[in-house]
Image 1 (cartoon, one colour):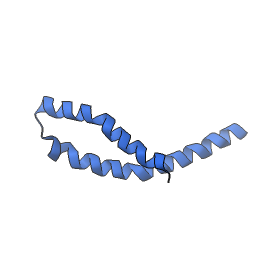
Image 2: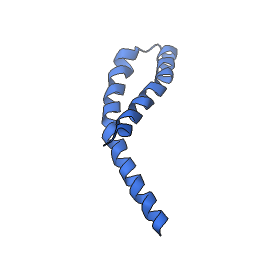
Image 3: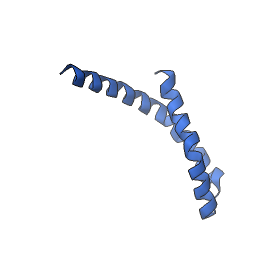
Image 4: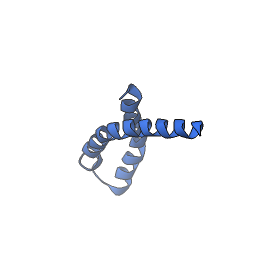
Length: 67
């Protein structure tokens, strides 16, 4: 696992926040109890998923170039 695998989910978390805040504001939901903890948890869970995807993509990409 490299630094990009860790940074990418957190960059997505930051990029998604305006939409989550807007949704909470429009629907009168509490951000902290609705999205806050779930987003942090899901971001941490996505780190190994992104790492595995990157390795799989590299293998498939390299194998398609050699054919």
